[in-house]
Image (tube, rainbow, N blue to C red):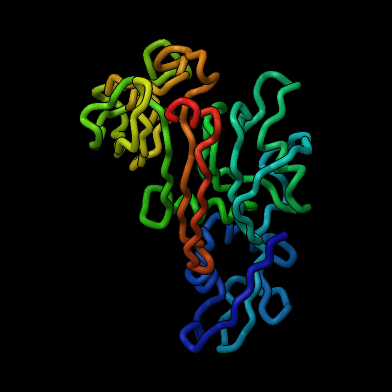
Length: 291
């Protein structure tokens, strides 16, 4: 259960409580409709009220914005998790390699979602603001309620939410920096593989060379859009697939996954306005590729 509260100001006086909820607490119309049906969904000064209640300055408004049931029913699986940041509404988890975010077809293979279900408090459920491929390591932002998930999704691809990656590509990337502006769509005949297509969705990636070694390039990648496999597809399109990327390049004996790491995550908290920054160092298997 997540109860949000605030004290009505002079500016709120004379307004309906539903207006204040949608403005100050950024409650969507869909959630407002659900709050109306909850026993203690909308309260003022500790008493349930209709959404049409007219506020007075000093009224204490509360709203139960927590999930009443999980997004889907899964078996929790206890596991060791690396948590880079956590508060009442959000957490940032540092995902290890080869851990799928969601359950796969193999019932014996645990997922990060199941691990978070075991980790979170009763009444909190994981909602992934962004996702990483199974082989990709690093930072992921997770909301603990559908309400917070919706607020953060509104901030994707804005100045209020930034994701930066480190990657190792095969070859010496030339030019050493630039912007890849190439539309991406689902490859013909595939339900998983993507490719650059003239009629695909516009996709932008900014890249910069950090170092080179042994015929490989360590890159800083900044996605400006969020297409599936965008960074992997764009680097392969440029002619420099990520090391170990069997889907868009070739397998490698040096690493058993695509050499991609979510290195830095910066966002503005939608409720407090606080700037949150998390960093995750390059994992050892990628460090060995560009010593």
